[in-house]
Length: 113
Image (cartoon, rainbow, N blue to C red; front, side, top):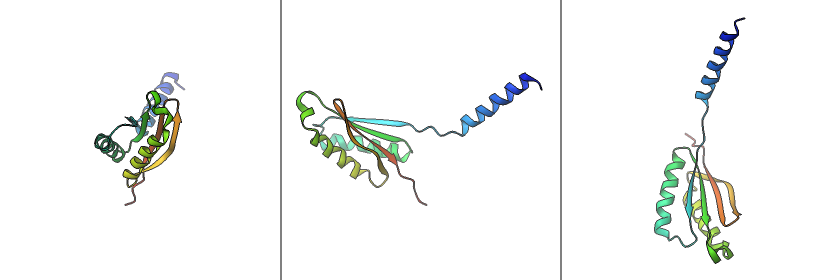
């Protein structure tokens, strides 16, 4: 067996396998607890577009200073965003506090035709 031919065929198979893969991209939306509804609307509209394209969306709320003592405000915001996008997404990772930020991961639902 020709070793060079073997290596060529192997790399060719790997290249074909790479083309068949689907890469899932995770987009992120960053907010603050004091972000008003109007600006949050822009962000959710972007998230809706990304979810329709099949991407996952991480919604992160960052705290500054004493805001970290009121995580219920951020939790409420995250729940409202999840409700707004409930028709096309599902919550993959529930809101969780990580240092000075709280985040949740939304993934697109499988569309039934």
